[in-house]
Length: 245
Image 1: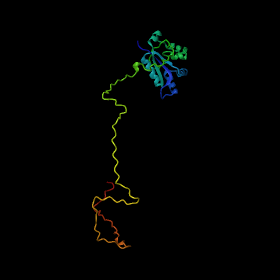
Image 2: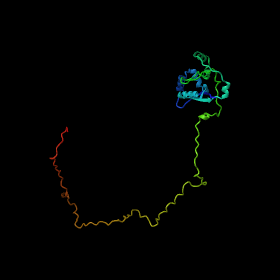
Image 3: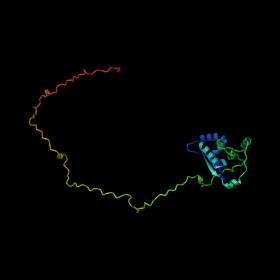
Image 4: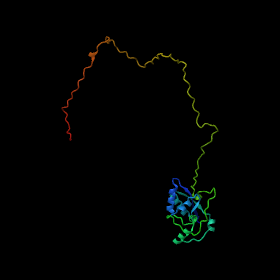
């Protein structure tokens, strides 16, 4: 026997949607008046579509989600369906209008076929929905066939072993080097000159025997370098390129 489902809405909004926008979209999609919208958003679980197949229930859920409303889908127990089974027939337009006018707001929400988006094709029914029902506490949200399949992985742990409690996870650090011996060193007095280290190359000893020092206050003005003369370049072999070339 094909499983049947009911679609409910309790006024919950999806993330990123505001109440006024969702109300406006639902009113446009389902052609609802303000009293019916107030009933939908009263906080109580309202029946949107009853006794439908899974594909139709999912279509309702998608339409609600696009409007920003979060609906729930519950499977109808086969025993309850058989007890409440009733013959169905197609309604004329006049019969549907008369039934809608004579049905209170709550009945409109619970009567199959009176609230439906244009994209959903369904069969009209004359039976009621049996009222609003809440799932029992602890009921699974997803059915078994709707859940993601569990992936079983076999991990090879034959190369692993548990070490003793308190064992280091890394090797012991190496011992630090011994302190250098500074017993042969001492500190020089403050202000003492520290001699330079010996050079590795032989010192240069230039011969300055032919050099003498000038007398004190000697005039070195005659040693001024002569003024440099500009160089004259010969450009006779060069010619200028025409400006329009």
